Image (tube, rainbow over all chains, first blue to last red; front, side):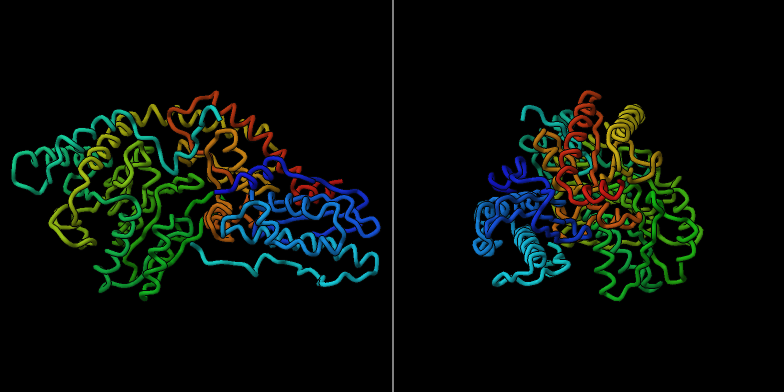
Length: 144
Length: 393
């Protein structure tokens, strides 16, 4: 059901863990729906020097978190803002339709961590909106 | 992956080699249509008669009370919709439970749209129906009680005999979905006052695509599938002869070996539960500890999600299942786990391991060892576990 890339990122997740002195931390999703992602960013100057994640969720949730962190690592904040859920999905060679919401969650988690960073440093990031407290509901689908 | 350890026998089972041998002649050699008059057809007819007798014997029924269907789902649909239609003059109220298989639940939901009223009984934290609540919910217009024999997810065995007594006392038809129980635990339709019973072949080492509905003699149930006089004019369509032969053979083997297998399975099951409880923290056993199917083990592992657990086990060659939302294609975890009172976040982390009589202790030891590592690995990844550990400090 999953691509080789998804399986690879599930088996060997990149950047899994915590950053003690993170510049920004974002947590999205909810346990009720079965997905929670937390992203830690270490930003120096304008560059994401380090990024870590923790995820409670299915195989796709773990893999999209892992890939999303890979895609923003070493990038500037502006470049990281351009990493969309679509980019995460493409980098994983696709996701089953019922798992697309996992990639949205990964994008939201990065944005939430950037928001936290911006709040703490009293700056504004172009195109960044305050993260929703809960993104679990907006992508519900009918039972198949 | 060298070896597969199959612990999903509640989903389906491996066909018994002896069952396969009995089925074989009915594909190529004795292919005659049982309804035909020439002599080669009589072989097929004879085979069906033998299978029907074997199935009837396995639940203490009469031969004329067994109707072959294509499986448990069809049997449930036929029983419930059939009673609803035939007894509509008495009323439109049906009693069932919140933990039924979807074959029963979705059929009841369909009937609700047709103007029927359904009472979905609660269950306790072990998944047991409360007999007093059942009796209280009976109304003058109640036409059917449909309660499963044993639950497919958590393995809890319902008090079927007591339910049958209540149904009989109030003169209400009693249907039970016995798909998980048939061939695994003793069933006697007369002693248990069961009027209708659904079962399936592939859950007892028989073939897929075959099942039966037991219909007590005096029950009015019209044909559900029209187009022929098969099955005493109650279920049209040319008989699945090899399937029926296979079901009969599987029923006989399961019943002949039931006591011995159950004894062995209960030992294995309790060993597995004990080892998991000894080796993994923050878990919860789902289902009743003793009133449960001999082969069912079901735990929730806190702070982790079921699908990632299943994928990780699969990577080690272990086949299992989960009630997590991600495995069902919906956002909600299993209705059974919610009905026994689990919060969503815990219900997402469930794991069902269902053994077969061929499961070895070595396999179980391997599973526990892998499970321990996988749970640790997934918890190390889990923000919920991180928060929990921090809160403990």
